[in-house]
Length: 282
Image: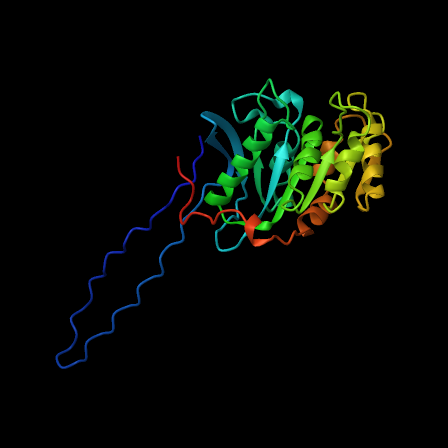
């Protein structure tokens, strides 16, 4: 397990000085060095959060250059159905996790990666609350910018991205759902129900035209509904793309430049708790 740790600098031993000449003024003492800044563990860090008498495992990615001297953007990544589980790490193996490992400089942000339970889905009340709990705990443990909260996900997590943003449109700065809209056994018109809540959320949606797992029409319908509701979402459809178009998206510098440039001005009552005064611990 990787846990952020505080590294305390040892005190330097005073040097042996030569005796001053008789009658000489006393030598001025050297100024004390500034206190060392606590160091944080970086990379993919295993975490747990407890709520409703259950413990949920998740992962936080902390970039190598992280420092609490500034507020960092935070990205929530929602994985696909194949990465559901309870180990808290499988969700780092597909999608955003591999992209970060290959191109670390592309994502100068703290990334929260919750894990959906095997018998559940991202749009359920339980998983929505679990995701919010992971995010809230990360706000306490790291210095994050509450006006730069982004949500992205693929397949099942793409659907979860839509629903999370529709639930919290005033907190989310931007979303990037990838091949992820499903009907969920709802009556026709689900897109029309979600669209008014998504119209004010900056959105860039992606889908492969040859997707055999989630029909591309699902993304088209929701994008059209958001536009009818007054929104202005971006939509990229890869003509030669199948279901797994997320690798193209996450390795594209233009995507990250757009996403991390978005901001959401928050009302005071929507601001998250202040960060703790020390790094996260076990």
